[in-house]
Length: 348
Image (cartoon, rainbow, N blue to C red; front, side):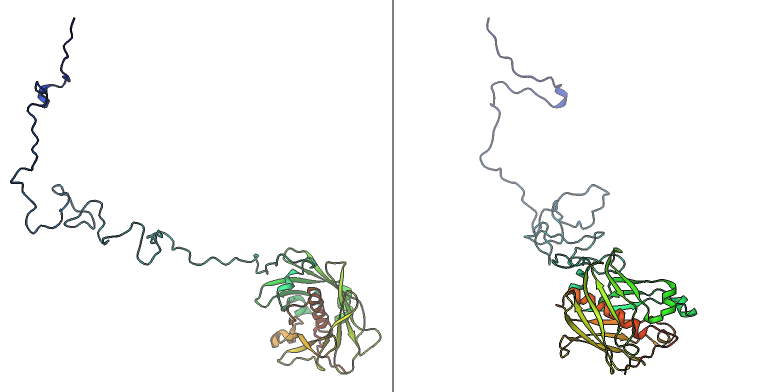
């Protein structure tokens, strides 16, 4: 039994334009080798291809003009690279409307909240809390105004804010004393002073025992012990007897004299600053000063809230810087803390 191949005939109705192929294969197919003559070329004086025509009634898109080609963006020249904008590096897109401008400068890191100074890191052989003093050569000490003390004369515990030269807080100091001692002994009273950092940690402790000044008893002069951290002695301030001007010595933990402080003969301030100069241990080279700054007529006469400035070498040991800060408190109590409505002191 032989099988005759049946020609392929899909089941499409002839009405849809399908017609079976002619018998004999490609007998009726003809492909000319050359294009036929008479092919109409582009109209004369005609530019580029005008592109697709718009349907009747359709409006051209924004930016579309005569001769618009699909995929071509008007306004760009030949050789334009995608992602490149004039004036910008390759690959850096131009900021678009609605997006923030690119960051051209790194933000400056902010310090701790409340205007406190940022603690330096990576310091060795430094008592905890004294790292702040390693990067500064000036301190500003502001005493808080106590309204009860200003209006009634009732002595309260002194409070101070210690700042650096740019106004950032470094320490906060508060006097720890009882009511009887404050109001009976006046500015010569003994006290304990706590100096705390931003985290309310006591980093420096000042101890002032009860003593006399040079005018009353030259054998029992003023002194102050400085410990940091509390309990570890790092130095002391001791008053020297003098008949012309106040004089102090700054000692280290071993009791050796490191610096000397010499004040003016008259410590009464009349619209000006009062300076206590800091010298080297031989008393010849000036290395800094402690300045009682004029704080205004009303503040000077009606309160004992004072402004002080301390300057010292940048490379000075942080322990001696802390002792100089304690000397500023001692000078404030001895000469500028009002006693019996008087703040005038003259040394003989």
